[in-house]
Length: 130
Image (cartoon, rainbow, N blue to C red):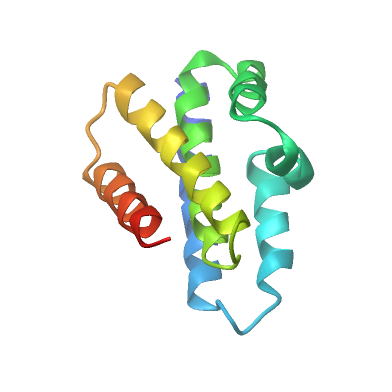
């Protein structure tokens, strides 16, 4: 019970931080904020940018099983948000990573999420434009 409360509070904090980032986007050092979000909520920024998807997926094994999908979703959201700040080919790589994670979560989760479905569709549209 306490573990679930912790992860739910962490998720709320994360999305509040992302929302604050989006409201100030362009008015601050965006990449510095993105680095802080990675380091605070999912882990070392550098690791998640140089590692393969298999290594990224394996990194989530350090978390309890009931937290993994939620933490993956945080990472997928960070990839998605960061993609807006990057140009080719990094943008495409980040969108592909976000798509892979959101798709994996969607297949594994027992909870239907319209927001997740919409995010997947947004990513597909952005990748088609590249």
